[in-house]
Length: 419
Length: 132
View (cartoon, helix red, strand yellow):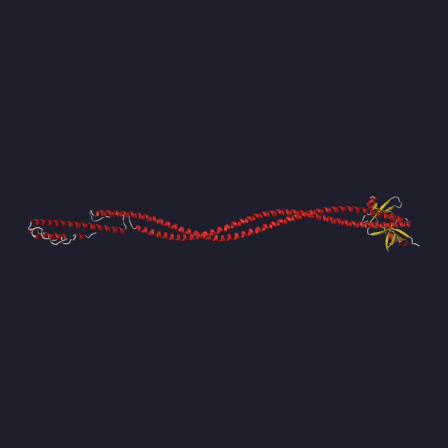
């Protein structure tokens, strides 16, 4: 604002050189006096002495001098009036500024500004300041509400960030454990894949061995069939032999009976010869010889009987052995059949096992690859999670700082009283 | 000059061999051909182990024949009469059976000489008592 004192100072214009009177007949001194007066007034010398009208000889100049005096007086009067208004307005502006500063310092926006001075020129200022105050009040109110919301939101953000940090930490821990577990699983998958490959190889070897065993069992069953066939032939031969031996035994029995009767006849002949005395001596000798022959036959038949008995026993033993062979061969065939059935089942099972082992081997390879990919992904996830954890910590710190700032802002806004 | 001889029938009952005069035996037969009632299974000589041979003996009257079951008929032998000795009186007194009549020395071994009809008769007489 311009200094009111400046109003008292009219703009200085370069003083013109005194011009000579334009008309002859006009006293030059009076005109110069008027000119000097006007120039001095224009130069701001308002308090200078007025023109002495009475001293003017020329009536026209006198009138001009009177008009100049009147104009000067009026100008001074107007100037005083203006100076007073400037002072009033300046005081009002100062008061308004002071009031605003006081309101701002005290933060009390609840009241209405009242000035000790009143001037129409201050009305727009007061109205503007009032609008500024209202706007400021509205701003403060909005800022307070926003600060409150910001505080609440920042607290929620802090809580959420803290929760997020905690969750992220737990997630990072879980992911770390999962990664470690997946690492172990990777090793286990590798081991399983190797074992599955080994199982597949063993199953293949077992399959080959089982096929060889199947061939051996077939050979065994063929041999058993031959043994049984031979045993049947031996049995038939033994049966024929037994019948012939029985036939021989029958013949020997007849011979034995004949020999016994011969012995008996010889005995009776000897007896009769002895009864006849000397006459029967030759007869007795023949009878004795017959008896010796009969006894020889009996001895021979006895030996034959013994031999037949031995043959019977041997035949019986051979028959039992043959029956045993047949039975064992039949049992062998049955066992071979059972073994064949079992081996067929085993072969089928081994084939299935081999197929399953191959499938398992393939699956475990895929599993190993998948596990390695999962481990890789888990490592990446762990890295991302670690970054997220760092970000969460930073977010938590920022949220905490934001909460403090919100609280600080709320505290600051509280200083402004709007109601 | 030849020494007079006696014809002796040798038979075995159990483990012992006995001697009898050939005229006491009618014939030698098979036990299986004789009915059970005509057999003499056990006598004063003892019981035979088997039932293969039988000596057919006629009674003193010659009316009946019985078959004495023996284990074996060894045969007929001619022995000097000097080797056939009667049983001493004190020995005969000691024996219950009267069928043993003497001793026969055969191959320097003494054999009891048995009277087969007496033996069969004693058995026939003793049989009812045994039965009773």
